[in-house]
Image 1 (tube, rainbow, N blue to C red):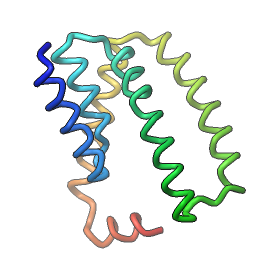
Image 2: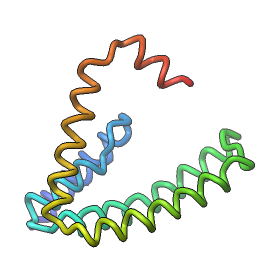
Image 3: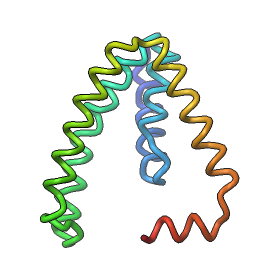
Length: 127
């Protein structure tokens, strides 16, 4: 794979993520389709890419006093527990089934976004 293609995909992932649309989806699709990587491996790499970005976000949000630290610990604990549980389930399901589940999930989210009224979107965004 050429460095140019990898750079373009990385740029698009970052750009789409900055719009709040889930840049990880672009990375997963790229890895699964164009590099012939399995769904499980693509999701794992996506999670690895997420870690440094999450750390930078925590630092920036802390400096801006946007993090409520008392509520953070329960979120971290439940998030880690859910990640462990569902990663074990995902490894038991296999790539083929995960690909189908992911496809259905993306279609449902897309349909939901298309039929959602603009005022509902703004209310949900600022709660």
